[in-house]
Length: 344
Image 1 (cartoon, rainbow, N blue to C red):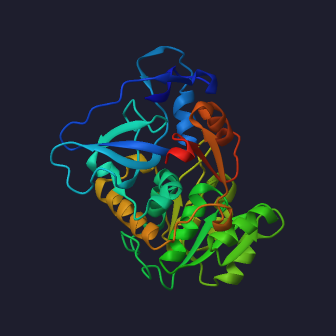
Image 2: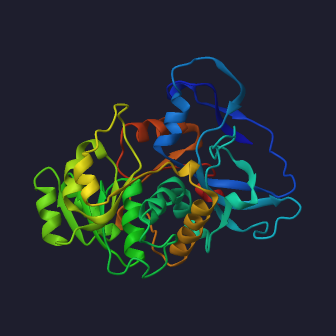
Image 3: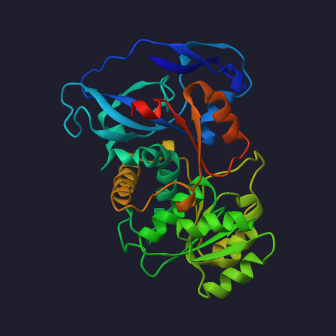
């Protein structure tokens, strides 16, 4: 089978297209023929590493997310059958084999049925972004642990950076769950994407006073803030969050300490929830997987420009370019067509 691997950490030039044996399945495992592999910031950051150029004992195949068809199952596998369309999550987490290859073997619980093979692009897009978004939206002690339709009815959610992959998923999931959604963006083009995703109110943080505008929309404050850049947004976040609200923080490009205004946070009894989807509890992860699956089935997690998430496609041999596109902050979702379209 064809696979992309890297033998040492570094820039995208360390990625190489190779032939590898098709992996065998063991008890409780599922082999998936990957059709589409999704690329996230965590993929290129893991590949880049921390500066060491030492060669790994075992080459690594990148990419956490993907979708395709069940190709083989081991003993005791019950919830999928050969031929089923599926999506996978956290494929490369603490493992050497991600989804940038034609076949991957995973434990059964990491292989999730799709209701239709036409949703393969959706399946390859939801893993890291949607599971992160679900945890961000459910981190509050006053909100449900698992989203369902109408479970956020009467609540107001602020999503900063609504044109990003996690922001896009957070908008879609919150709207599906019945919330009123406010999002911030930086341009008219990104506003159009956030609107297509379903956001009810859109604030351009470059031209508007975010705190004033959000308070006009939600006089009592917002219940949850899903924040992509707390270093830039914390002052406005504290100004608009409701008492006992939750500030969910899932991303930063800074290694500097985050200075938290203590008194303002204490007076409102604010909860700060830091999120790394890989290390959420098994219950939190399963709630997220189940809710995302339900939302997919309801058509609530559509992708493509018409749904607010433009798709950028690369061939498997172009995985390095796909990683570079994500590293360079391409707006939308970067996908790798592991199998040619005519062979799907």
